[in-house]
Image (tube, rainbow, N blue to C red; front, side, top):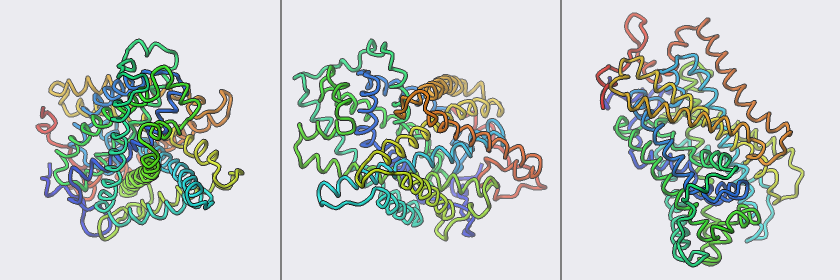
Length: 513
């Protein structure tokens, strides 16, 4: 196993990322920004309350956090050995084989691209609304979305260090305002007392609890991204593991607290009705009531900056997945090139082009007047983000199986039995969430049960996985050397003697407790 000093893949020749650019704080900021705390509190939580009527949402966040903590135990263990910019698909490739890794790579690229592209719709609609309300200026949402895409692409090209700094500042403002709202809700509950009613397990006996759990799972998307930055992180073997588990803990605590705060501020008996009436305006109405108009105006602004932070975070992740796929022959070799500073330039450009194309497609079909949020929010954001979240849950379930096989293949099953058990439990739970998400997809995206869109969107993920699987079989038959390098990352840049495949990590490391 190479030492920390040797683990960088940067060689100054435009074919590798530059190591040592990030510390733990930078990785954590990049990961938590993708979780978009304010977007979840203002958007996902009221939608879940309105769609399901399940008041026990805070408890569901704790349950989902526990499942993901079990996943994180095994995932972090493998990520110490597999340092790769395409983290999830690399884990799948090293556990289940290169062909499965090829399928997972296309699944990951599709899921994360959908998540980022959908956020452009939310960003454009929200900024358009703010400009109209405060400056009496009317600008189409898609114009603002395209401007955001250009700015995100420019920041990403400047390198991960600058991006992490921007994300850290925006994330700090976002979390601070969410916590202020939470404290105010605790100080001034609607019913005059702090009630733990939302944590009562009996509330989970309602029929809508499965759908509510799907919303909760979608809200956690982003925690799994820490290993994506392993090639660029100082002391990656230690930092990445800590960030994965710390991110799960922070997101669980914040979301459980904030969803509880919403129930307290509205009243546990009234929160579902209030969410149905006010939708995404619930948080802002409650903030205006408890904290005043100035705070609410600031909350609107920070909501926009939080969406932008999530856009930048997902862009960095997608560009690194694309870079990793280009480096390993799953995409054209040009995509696997970097700038002089070690940023994945072509991968970043590819993601910008994909996002612009999707925004343009929705803009061309948007027949509403300027400022109307129907197309960008109800369609682009809801459809794309739900599809992307389903894709990530499928990836996590597949990775859970890969973790088990990875340790078993290296003779570490006995020493790592607790990781294998955790991965198995998490995998079964995540597969169940994915299956139920598909079943309830019409409800999650707000269409009728027979609507073709509810079949088309999950079908896109199926096509991505199937296409990647077919690509893997073709590479195995026609380019076995390229096929063997899938999931190897920077190791592929260091030729093995006599054409032998790159070595696996030493068994002694795999059996560490």
